[in-house]
Length: 154
Image 1 (cartoon, rainbow, N blue to C red):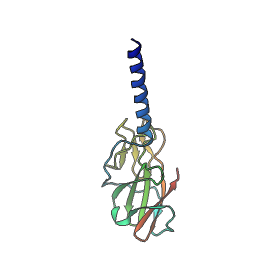
Image 2 (image 1 turned 120 degrees about the horizontal axis):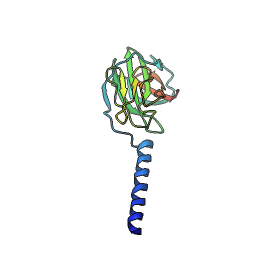
Image 3 (image 1 turned 135 degrees about the horizontal axis):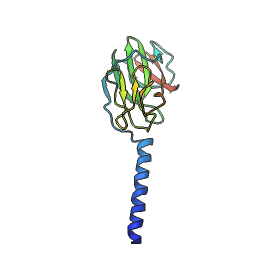
Image 4 (image 1 turned 135 degrees about the vertical axis):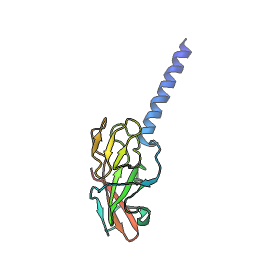
């Protein structure tokens, strides 16, 4: 009987540890690129100073498109978008409700596959809960043919 209780206790600890790892590192899977829409939360335009870390070639983010990259340092998903020629945005791909990775934007929205929170693809604002906080934004600049991701701004 004591062996059965110990086994249950270990199994429970393993499940809890696994959940913590999923929240901190192994976000839910999402495709790395796809079509995106939106009018952008003005986080970057045209040529910049190159502040931040180079994360993508300009050509990899077409007008109206989206590219998923990893945030320098944390490795968390970030979606780069170019809603109009020469203007770029960068929004966190981490749902503010439970830390899952939101799906690439579709029909102007990011949707979290874990609990169906919806976020505006242009601003990151919450459109539908259970999330109550907007997706974080990152500074983004363009230098030559490279996009540089800055720090989280909100």
